Image 1 (spheres, rainbow, N blue to C red):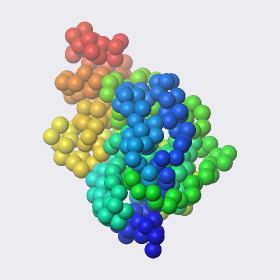
Image 2 (image 1 turned 30 degrees about the vertical axis):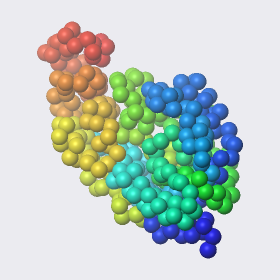
Image 3 (image 1 turned 180 degrees about the vertical axis):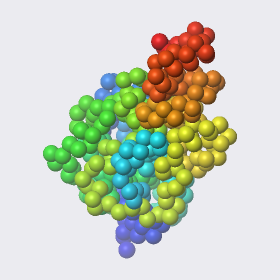
Length: 367
């Protein structure tokens, strides 16, 4: 058995649903696309993308000895349509990948097993990555034949649709590469048309500053007014452009038990989330990607969702946060209450708290 074939067999035995090999030292145009993305400031507050751009531009810019890239994927295909969660306005819609155990923990341990074996077999150095280093995994995955970058800029697989979590091993060994996958999007633009905030300036281009996933996870401050209503009940990420992809009809539900969705996170009531203090938040979301984002940012999103719920009873869940220590949370609470209360009740609330005058950090929300 060749090194490449043995490598793939071991990867599948460890639970990876997709595996392929690409040349890590071959030229590619993705560095130029990244430079344009940053020049247009479409990376928003993700300053690390700009500071690490020279290393991210090509695998060998990060590690000069890299010759081969072993790309793996694990399916996290949901067993229900994520778009259905958007209809229940009193519950939180959470991106499917985040309703499970943190994929970094699941994938990295398995990758290390393969990397250790590969290092011994090839006699060459290896490095393991799971979305934690300046490496463009999606272009490498396309070169490795796992899938292609769709018009929504995410990876699409003919077997697993838009539901693959990626990991990578760079090796100084020369391993036979696989044939790159070609683009199979055709004339379809479902992912572009469904975006609630028009985050795609053109096919294959994303403006993160308009993306709900970015706004609810990466963005730290007040969410711009123009996007709040469009966020709906999405409190962590957004699955819309992924879920609508026609290639998902070939994808099955995730089969990895360690990546099974947690029932207590899939559709939690907004009132329940609004009541979490920091300790309760950490306990509730322990071991998931949500915990890393932190209570204040997630609570901001929960309050935006409460404001979009149309349920006046949820005003009772938002009101206590007018006195939250975090200004962004206070601002989101004001916005939610303005949406849920009649003008007289909101005006009375403002007078009671006098927050428009004594809290300059949220004064604009009260105006």
